[in-house]
Length: 605
Image (cartoon, rainbow, N blue to C red; front, side, top):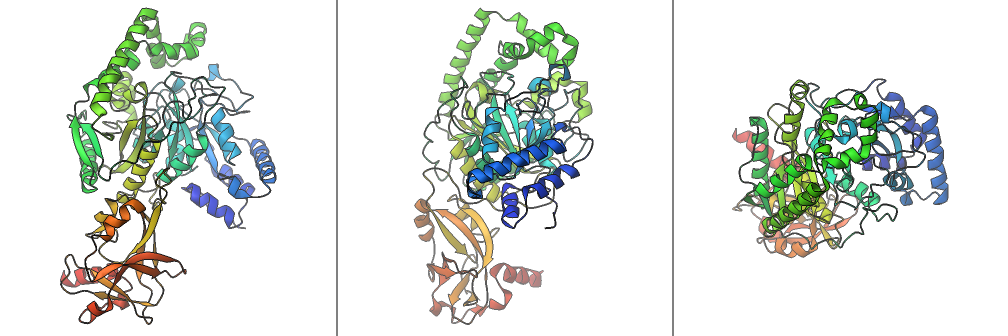
């Protein structure tokens, strides 16, 4: 079978390719062979022999499940790993050659992903020892932004973001202590999911701050982030910081209340400010209630991370190397970590007491809210600017991320379109611990309402599949043919109810479409006559608990009935009583309401 390009494939694309008969050996060998020979985003890559060994291991897994690939949900899916996470047989460098070692055992998260069929392709560049938010503190080179090379990629998971944003792999692992998995996502048009601390085992991760570290995902879509997190999550008895998953909270209300900074800081970046304002406007249109709040306790918490004794955790991770060979550590990183010597045990306890005081204030701040919505980063600077002022600009980059791990919050970074200068912008939803189901549910809704392209490409993403949020798995598929179509006047009634666009399709040829007279906004009537033509419809998935409120909004002569789609499926859909079309215009020949409206508008122009 001819091997086609796998660039910018999602998990669903890889799975579909294997269903069509492609083999992992064909696709992965082609992918590995087409990667650039020199690429600063990678520190190491699996050799030809190493890939062969991994394919042989994958074959053994297939045999163990009797050839049932449904039991290997990530069968043959390639991924990249930040080079502070152990992969057996590949060096772990943390972007410090003098620190490098070759582990004999995988990190726990690698075992979980490989058990699901995923295949490691290589290890990615990072700010040395995961200390930085711009991707420039590495002896292997500064990782450029996937959109414009003169700009920073964001860090410290810089290489992981780059290889996903450029379509090399569908997902990559990062780590996050102060925003390292969210900032590069925001700078490269990706989804960055930072789970609750302990939800994903960090055994096999070289720590930055072991008490705060999280392993994160960088993906093209919310759907892929959801799938990967479900596979990675789980209690690990060998990891002291692993935690048993707590029951997810109740679903958010139809119109959640999200706190926003009452006085956001942009550091003079007008494009970043405009992009955030556009995102807030879109959120308001979706029915989200935005509530300005004072972020002072959040910012005071953030200051503890680098200005307080938590910096000593970084010294605990690689202090021996700093004592033996201080020149081996990047000078900016060394300057940050050397501050550890200034703090005593008494200072540490005092800082922890202060953190708990601030955490209680933040609890009160968030009590009337469902979550927070912030710009992922307040600015996006050039590599030249970052190198000229590496400490100040780095600190500013973490303005809306540094406090999250210290307060045991969960977060998802989401693309929010391109800025006026063509660079990516992003927003981040922050919620209490164990709110990952809510983050995913909201992320699907946002992706459906404000879709983005695949990384740095011009390729559209498929609409999000129906939510897999526990307790919200009862959904109704509803076909819409008129004013509820995407971009049409009543589409908001679907979005407000958390509905998710599944696909665009057509009915059988048994229907005729009419432009109803006197309806406001203008609406069509879809009538089954037996002698019509295929009519364009969109299939939306509506939470069953909100389906009734949607039906209640339908004015006569329209109603909800059963529609037959071209592929034979029968779904709920908007239909019209036949008596109402006696004086209506038959527009069946247009094939759908959207085509009719476009023709009508062009004739009026």
